[in-house]
Length: 509
Image (cartoon, rainbow, N blue to C red):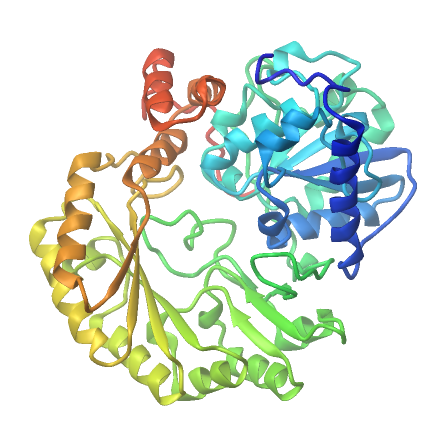
């Protein structure tokens, strides 16, 4: 049987009921699940497992927004934890809320966070029994839509598979989509109604203007969780925005100050008002939460109420004894910061204003507050990086470990579209692996090094830099089994090159 064709009914009745029972068990542990009968049914899909998808603030926000729309309802679907077992059972992809086929929805909408989730989209379409390619679907099929964080950079690899891309912040544009779908009642009518509107792009419909990434009005903030569940990466944590965007200019980052108006603050009063009384763990989300001028006041109020607190992004130079002490009172045992460049020289070239002294002070503050470990994230393979830069990092990390135990999270640099470093080449895999080995050897026994695979970072880079042909290469690689050699072959045969990306949105709107 071809991998991209699901044969409904193949497999045992017992297998199907085991999947239904698993969904019912997840629902039983949730707080805040929404149910609604409405003529327009949206299968809201996340192309990673439940534990990852339910940790996504954007995904949860879209779920609530769809339910708030008159005449529309949303039911969630996720990539199964064990895809081969699910496929072998012959069970069609089902929604959580009603355990009914996702393919029966009017709209199948994906929230895609990053490039390597493209194959998750293919897997879910396949398990739903839907044609994978846009051009192979007809009027009887649901409208297939994709949005999410990936659309801020390069959604072009999704073009062969989706009818419509919803670009940028969908807090408001989602309602335009639902209005168009209700009023038209057809896939084609919906696409015609949205053609040329800011925040939307319909691939394959002839010449279209460069699509604009939508920006939500400030009064729509803060985004916040709808469902609390223990079965997530962030166990039983209620997520809420403290701010959106960033005021900094790091040249590698999609969410830098030029993106959608830069940093937009949410007052502590509005954040606190959005948190349900029953929430005992609260995660403050944003691209630069520690840049919020009233963050200590907000965390103080949360800790005083007896809640545990998490912060999604911490800048070492913004940490104070008061703030770190509050985080320790809020349950922190490990402090996490980012260094990004291996040396001071590299950090200056990427406009990352973090110095060694800031990281050392963060370690000292964490130790004084009773924390047990410091995690530091950084990139290797930045343009112009040399062995001397890695040696500077090795020396510094050894010194840092004399203050507090240190873990280094090391990722190969992957240039993204819509950033000043767009188009920067990917460091050869063999070179990256050599640099990681050099770093590990220099820190062995002193600092824990947790590297990200150079090979899979290259796959991410190709998807981040190429056009629709990279999406077709992803389809080929997935059909072949999804190994690294399959990806190399597929990119080569499809002629994927980092200079071709057809759907490059522009910011604003």
